[in-house]
Length: 256
Image 1 (tube, rainbow, N blue to C red):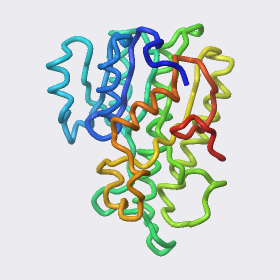
Image 2 (image 1 turned 45 degrees about the horizontal axis):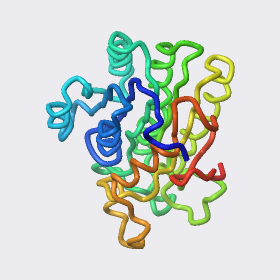
Image 3 (image 1 turned 120 degrees about the horizontal axis):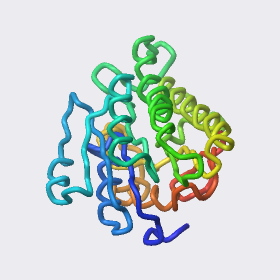
Image 4 (image 1 turned 180 degrees about the horizontal axis):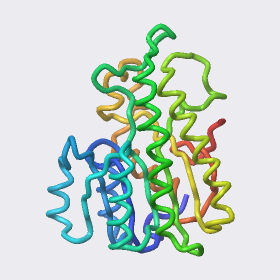
């Protein structure tokens, strides 16, 4: 894996950065002197949370912006702001995702599947990242080296599915993987120096996983800071390494 200190200067984007893995990714990159600026997003309904204190400490190196990934107008406004400030990015990590929220819970059986919950999971976990990529890629020059990565999940692997259950989350992450693989194939021509990746972060001690940690061995439950460092190591330098890959936190490939 490449040394983190060898990374290039430039702009980094973290989508879904107000908590959990996204917040840890922001902190890790601000601690890297090779990173010139981090742009971090938060859901308008929830507010920026700890990002505000980070912005106060890091001044112009951290810009926090509202973004609702299920709202096209919000995505377009965000892309215009990024374009006006930076004219593109070196690395973007889409860390926003949904497993449970209010009445939405992982389904244990087919009888638990609900149309509206399934649609919302796809809006957040699959369609949102794709629409964000559609808005951001026109900011990039054809020759620029950059990486667009989205956090996927091992349970999104069809080949690894031996237990069943979690219909909506599994399917929405599988759809995300297919979207990213298709985008990577298109970008081989449009952006030959781009890397498009799906990354499984491992089970991390965040609000997303907390209700489901009971059977996770302690040694396989990772702190957000550990996970963030591993993700950045897997991504490596902008535009380098495999594209169109589904990678585990240790850099190995996961079956589709």
